Length: 217
Image 1 (cartoon, rainbow, N blue to C red):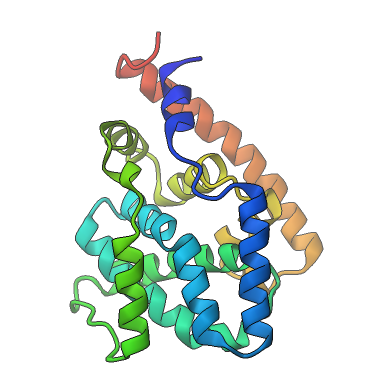
Image 2 (cartoon, rainbow, N blue to C red):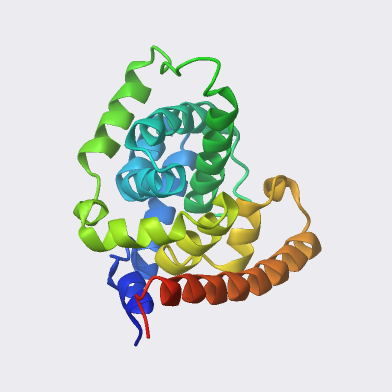
């Protein structure tokens, strides 16, 4: 196994499939009872650290990632009651995070984001920060980040969400499409097929970069 693949495999899989299924069921149960605070808490406890890690990897700055995460949490809190369950709560969270990162990038030059004065949102943000996975600080992670940062943000997102988060292709189509939550099933199927081809291209490019850096023979 080459070093690049070994490094990717070394990163902790934050949520095993069975755990995700149980978590999704618990979130949906709370949502069905209109207990949105509990649903948000369960979502943040399960996925908050990996969402924050996703933002940090994409944005190349802990400070910017933290601000985008605050925006993501506000969007989650406001949007949770109307969440239509077209995908898993995890997939929806990544969609919100990606949109928050893009919005932050557009607004970054104009003003610094300040979180809404909402005690619940602030508490949920604090929970996610305190539960951030230790692997985000490892040397292996930093080496992979440096290599991935040569890719476009969208390519980085696809690589992280497929390799490290193991999102299914259809869910990736929802997360990485601008209108994924409103797309029809045939549209999502076409987008999933496109993403598969793009993923193969990204892997080939990443391997070429790794070889140029002497990371693999």
